[in-house]
Amino acid sequence: MIGPKRISILSTFLLLTFSVASTSLASLIEDGWTAYEQKDYAKAIEFFQSAADNEDRAGYYALSLIYGMGEGVAVDIEKSHKLLTKAAELELVDAQVDLAYDYLSGYEVDQDLASAIKWFKLAGEQEDPRALFELGHFHYHGTGVERISKKRFAFINPLPKKDRPTLNSLSDD
Image (cartoon, rainbow, N blue to C red):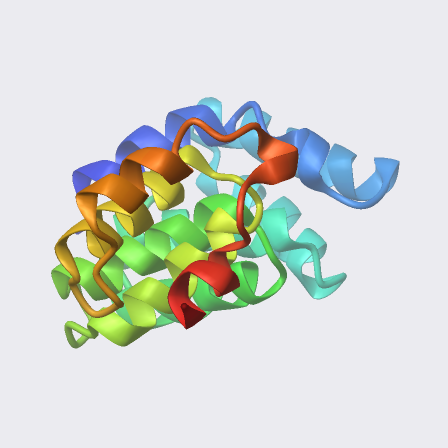
């Protein structure tokens, strides 16, 4: 079974074919989602697997969703997690955020705040608003990271992007 956050990610993921490295890989992903929408899961898996075989992060991510939901295959949470991790390691921000939430909540993995923070930081470095929100929350409350005072927190937020401290500088103060 898949959590609600992945279901919402699935709908937005249909728009993310631009994240692949080349036109041929983009075509595989696009064809995969077309087959998926037509409920031809075997064909969708074939397209996504071809993309993943070429180290395409979108292919890994799509397969992680399919195995997590059991669309055309038996639900395989372990395989879904491995595929999601691979997509996250290849810097797909949605995969990094999903992985962070999995570790934060303990969804189908051991709950691990340090791993959640690691993946939120990586996604935050790509300026993902979900990750930045969670990191801000952690720092504000001192959950697993240094607590930032209310005064300092309020000062950091309104800074223009070019003047913002890096995530690493926030945790190293």
